[in-house]
Image 1 (cartoon, helix red, strand yellow):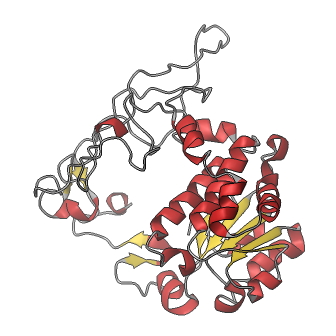
Image 2 (image 1 turned 90 degrees about the vertical axis):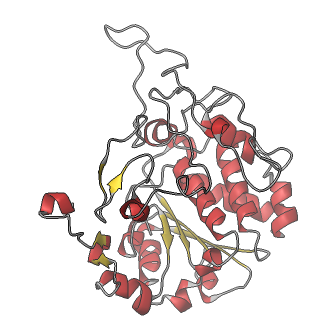
Length: 339
C-alpha cells in the first residue's frame, strides 16, 4: 500500500478492482466516500459482480473474471495514444528515458529475447545501454548541448560493501536483503544467474523518442491492447471501456498535473496466479500518469482491518515495528545505524 487509507480522501479519481471495500473494509471505505463528498472525486468500479461498492460508483463495468491485465493494458494504451501522460514526471522520476541494449526483443512471438529453449532466460540483452545522453541536445544559458540528468534512484555503479539490516555483508555476490546474512546468493549456490550490473553511464534520451527507450518499448508492447482486444478478452463492451478510459485518464487531460488518481485493490487481484503481473501493470499505469509519490495517488492494497492491517499498524507482526520500521539487528548499535 503506497499511501494509506486516510490519504484516499485526497484523491480525485478512484479505480477499484479486485475488491469490495464497502462490504469487506467498511471502516476504511469512509475515505473513498469522503473524497466523493468533499472533492467530487469520481469512482470507477470494475468487478464481475455488482457489489455494494459498485452501487456507490460513478461508473461500473462488469469484467470477465481473470482478465484484469487486459483491461489495465487497454488503459495504458489509451493514456499513451491520447497523450494523457505525465511526461516531465516520466523523464525525471522513472526509467522511461533510459535506453535498452541493442538486441533486446519484445515478445511478438510470445518470448522475450534470451530464452534458452527450456525454462530460463539469459538476460544480457535486458540491461541498459551505456553512453549518457544520446538524445537531442538542448541548449542552456552558457552551455551548448547541455541537458538535465534524469533523476533516478537507480545507481548505475556497483554498490560498495555494507552491512544489511540483518547484519550480513552486502555485495554483488550476496545481493543484500534476507540473503545477505547467510551464504552466497543464488548464483553461488548454482541457481539462476543474477541480472547483470547496470552500466556506469546509462544511456538516456530525454525526448523519449529513441526506438529502444523504455518508453518506446512500453508503447509498442501495449499497443496491442486496443479497445477491440479489451472487449474480446474482458467482455466489457468497447463503448463502456472507452468511457472508463476517458474518465480515469481525464486527470491528465491537456497536461493537467493538479489532480491525482488512485488504484484500489484487494485479494481479487493478489490471489490470481498472475497476481504479481496484475499489480505490476497497475504500477506501470500509475507511473505513466504521475500518480505515485503524491497525495491522493498510489497503488493501494486493501488488507483486513484487524488481523492483517491492524496487526501491522499496532506492531503485532513479528518482523516489523509500527510504520513498517525494521526490527533492529545486533549490529544496529545506535539510531543512525538502525535508520
